[in-house]
Image (tube, rainbow, N blue to C red; front, side, top):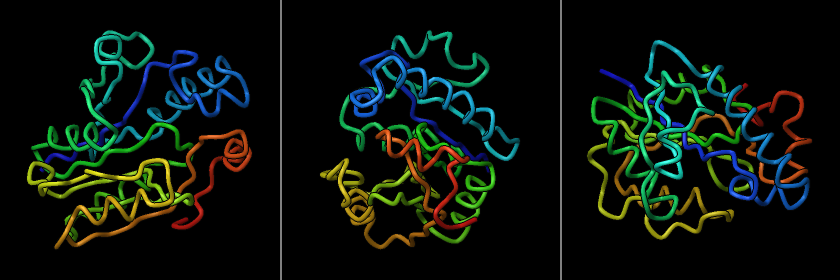
Length: 202
């Protein structure tokens, strides 16, 4: 059964990506950081056990971008809030289990991804929590069978994002894997500078 790992990415344009970080360190350095972070991430997560797909935004620019590796499939994220777009990307992974990850988490490794897919062997859903109450990964064993209301009315960018999303999966067996830091602020860069150690699941 094919496994699909979907990476949510944006074109690394100053002022359009990592703007919260950019307000602290400058928009050009923030875009530079994101571009090189994604390059490292894509190198580190390629594995024959799953297919890596890029979920790109903006749609047209992302589909034709020369920034990202040309050999990886690309899906346009489309419209809607973050939940709408992630749910849409998961639905496209119809051949088997699918996971979505963010691109701004320096600590993600093949080991973390493998553990998430392994958890879907006996669970319906899996999350990789973040220390701020959000999450760096969401995965479904049967991504085409999403319940009505999945990823709707989520309080994004708050400490409630993970619990809100889990609440949209009633009667699902849910697993959690390692807690990893994302990078939203200059302080986050310091936390993750030494290889972005997981806060658990080492």
